[in-house]
Image (cartoon, rainbow, N blue to C red; front, side, top):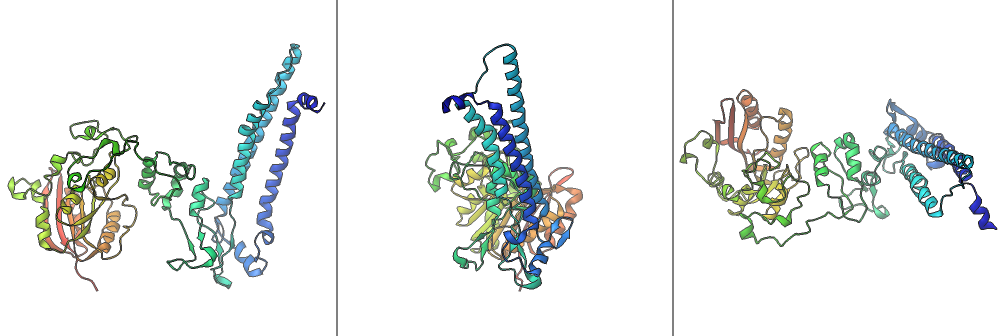
Length: 487
């Protein structure tokens, strides 16, 4: 009898009951949101003192409470209410559609169509449970201010709010930017009580792309989206947040060549993931191929050509451009035996580092995959790629590098203030007596004085300084400069 009653139960009544429950749920959420703001004592133990309450309710400006982004919190609540409103509209539309079908069936004297249990279950999962779960997670992730245990007393007592935690919607992003307190209150190896996961400030301008990048299954394989990550880095979202997934590799990965062979041999095609490049193999990257997919460092994948770089003397042909080409041996002769480690900031496949390795000098090469697998090629040649943009400070300590070399990276497009910040960072990592090798910096003739000042302002000792013509309106600047001692 019970089974018969259940089978005869009209679906429209069930939908109406669900709509009523959803309406009550929306009202409950609205009241709970107001309660979180106006009844802080029950949610925030320790804020019953007038001083603490005053600190929480101080308005810093149009943005919200003191040290708390109230606008971001309001946006998250609005997102949840929009999700619930869309769910209610969808349920109402479904109920109306079923009612119309029922009336048509009665008018035509046809038997009424009943939804089977599997269909009903699938409807509940896709159209009801999943949207409600998303709204539930969004509400659970909302953060409100809490007393800062390290904030001091009186006017120095602060409200601990994780930066941007209410700004992002992806759960993994919010978990990453949330401060991680030490276990049992013990100080870390750095002497701090908590650790923040840092991201570039421009990530707030690329929230949609970052949420897409952080949308993955924890512990599973990462999506093959390194190009999205690089696009975020180049857009200023640098550093990127860490991810808790397994980076994919090429399915055809082979054992790399020994170091005495790998320096001047193109790697195996199977050792590179080609899915995000125009080419699908190293042969396609030849300078003779007009559809290779990149324009910077044309010819960098031609090992026969690369072997000639920094080897031929400038006086061999006497051309104007050759005057700006310095030989590695001539540069090392300026500081015999003193150049041991260095940094190469260029666009290339690591040939400069390979040449220096042959002379027992270790070079770290900054590299980005600008249309071709530059970073992978450097590593497969047995060299060290540093996957970093010019947006962030070099991860090197002060006065540690013997040499900083740059070629083909900064050209006449670079803003003078940006170049100023970068050059001061290079000066920071160069040791006293270290060498700055500016290798064929190209710019317009009319801008030459401005760029020359940028390099001359540090008062480095000039070992070599050459300006030569690249074309009628463009010039090359090559220089070998030595950092003076500073106490």
